[in-house]
Image 1 (cartoon, rainbow, N blue to C red):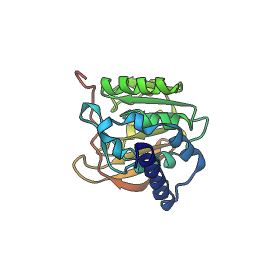
Image 2 (image 1 turned 90 degrees about the vertical axis):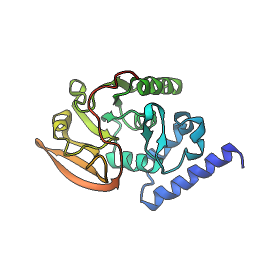
Image 3 (image 1 turned 60 degrees about the vertical axis):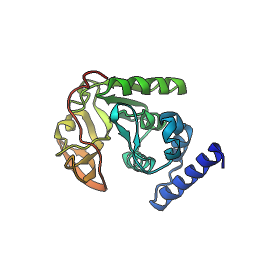
Length: 217
């Protein structure tokens, strides 16, 4: 079987897994299909393009498997008018997918190399509604807000209450919450007044959110 056939088979298997979880929205599936995921993954990991496993990327980091990425983006319930803050640019794949579902994505990462690589990938695809920044994720991007949606791909050790003010009224934040060395709950946090209403929607084991900027790369 050649590489193209392998990828088609992998994508079909991914779609079946998503349907099994009740995730079959045409807009989301279309957005994922329009972003060539293979361009965001190193050559040595191409067999994992449509895998549900973590995939290594530059700077000693990893990106989430496609199943988790799709589930989280689905849970965001994106609207074409939404402004989204993404914490953890990674390869840039999820920013590219969300950019097809909303008005604007501001994506931040502590690693300059990851931000630059993601920028090259998005520029090559002609994605023009994503702003990429190297920034301290602990602080967010208050000056760019408020956002309708916030998504974080690393774990907070406790409720991220400092992000309440960066969300619009009724806005939603999705983030793993729990110990950095153990299992975390994927929490869907809806802003009600000056507080969050929490709904846990899954379990993960992701890296803890680190403060500050990477010093060299």
